[in-house]
Length: 116
Length: 110
Image (cartoon, rainbow over all chains, first blue to last red):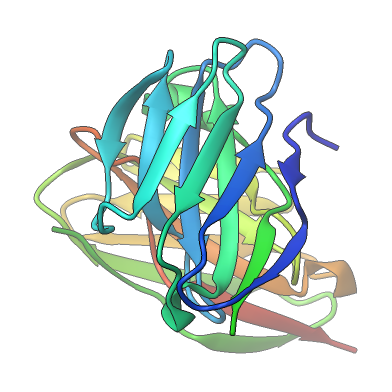
């Protein structure tokens, strides 16, 4: 069992609404990455935070935004929700934003978001 | 960009050996990961290959050939609990960590 906790575990929202998803990081980890995983697909990189700064972003529109706090926990915010945003949202915390750091990465259990 | 291909589904028998292939087209990358993901659960780390060759870890081995743009995950002595999705992921240069393939759903049958 990892120390990465995501909340909530499940969420149903209406199209056009806004949502905030939360992720605690493993103790000692300073990097959090967020991924979107649609059903039957692999996770797609949304963005990464390293020591409270955005450290890379995937091909997602600006209505996907995030934050990392001094304790390295993180939030993912999605505005103006669309039906296609329905997915499992995963966060991963790691020691560093490097390949070696990712070897010690732990994924949270994910938040299942359904947009209706 | 990166294009990662894996078979969508595979079925194998308990006790057997199965090889899950991953091919990719990328201009360069730091290394290649394999993850296991049971339905409804988080991906868990299996292996990370930086250099060409075989990395063995118990029943699981992973192989990388950069020149051929090819990796595989080998699972030996299959158990029912190995039924899961197996994700191949490239760790590219730059600030775009982990580009995943779509995953291979492995079913282990008795």
